[in-house]
Amino acid sequence: MPSVTRILRIVRPQLVWCLALLPLLVSAENWTEFRGPTGQGHSREFGLPVVWSETENVAWKVPIPGRGWSSPVLAGEQIWLTTALDNGRSLRALCLDRETGWLVHDVEVFQLPDPGPVHQKNSHASPTPVLDGDRIYLHFGAHGTACLTRSGKVVWKTQDLKYYHRHGPGGSPVVYGDLLILSCDGYDIQFVVALDKHTGKVRWKSPRRGYQAYTTPLTIQVQGKDQLVSPGAHRAVAYEPLTGKEIWSVRYGEGFSNVPRPVYGHGLVFICSGFDQAVLLAVRPDGQGDVTDSHVAWSLKRAVPLTPSPLLVGDELYLVSDIGIATCLDAKTGKAHWQQRLGGNHSASPTLADGRIYFLSEEGESVVIEPGKEFKKLATNHLDGQTLASMAVSGKAIYVRSASHLYRLQQQAQRASTGVLNR
Image 1 (cartoon, rainbow, N blue to C red):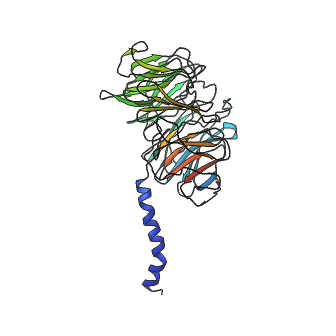
Image 2: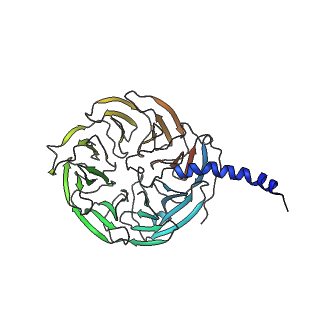
Image 3: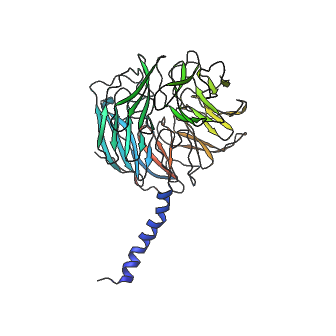
């Protein structure tokens, strides 16, 4: 029998390593929905990498089967994302282990005989899931909506929300209390709907007009009351989250195919109008009814994104257009501080983390800058493959999804795995 001293000599290094890792796991901020815990692209994590490549600061890189542009969401030891196999006929939820990237669950949620067409830059699995306690909520647009446990069991699913997306599903779901709220703006019919998150049954449904949009709503608080701001084609509407009753709306002409999620701060909601000529509106949300002529504080027409969401950092509002032109504005007045061409094409929304702003182009190039009224670039990084999904940040790591892989980027990381996903 080995001595106690020998046992301790063997166990102590592993024990020390586990104890050192524990504070990181406990303190890691969960990234539970599209654009993170605030819904506005902010992370409180620190110690993140500034530079990376295929061979530097990559903790692991694992292949992801199928095609999907949902962003990863993280809580505890789990990473969830969606994908579509067999040209969209098999819609699946994947769960990976945070530390290793190994596959934990692979659940087929829906089988479709004919998923229909998607835009060349879209997929049948583009909406980002929502993590809420022991539940994960998945939305594939009109293809279906579902609730799973974090052990991979299907709690409920529904395909009752019928509309024609035309270019495939886009907007992500949000949780409000015991409601799961979705913007469903089809080419044929348009509505915002709240489902009971426990059963999937419709609690309220608010029809609206204006064909085709792909946005994710944002919950804000105004004068002590919550509002759900949901941009659609031609106008954005603020609703009472519990009832679906309209509070105010703002018109922007022929704006349609909206994608950017709004951001909120300084008593203003920042909304992008969509195609063909995007306009950014800064709207005071304390009005009633149509506030187009009374509550638009300022607007911008140059280099406004069609796809990436804005980012509000302190007194500055940051934008990146689809063709890679970044702009920094005074959020209160709309005055431009600087404008800079980053290069590449952009679909992913920028992220604030560790006191830095991270931009990610479709070509796999990341530009990292220091926030401020003067442009200061810290790094330009490159990963292989197309990257349209927005970053996720948690536990001193950045997670980037490409067309074929998921990366965990971490400061001074040694590559832990090039894991294989087996079903």
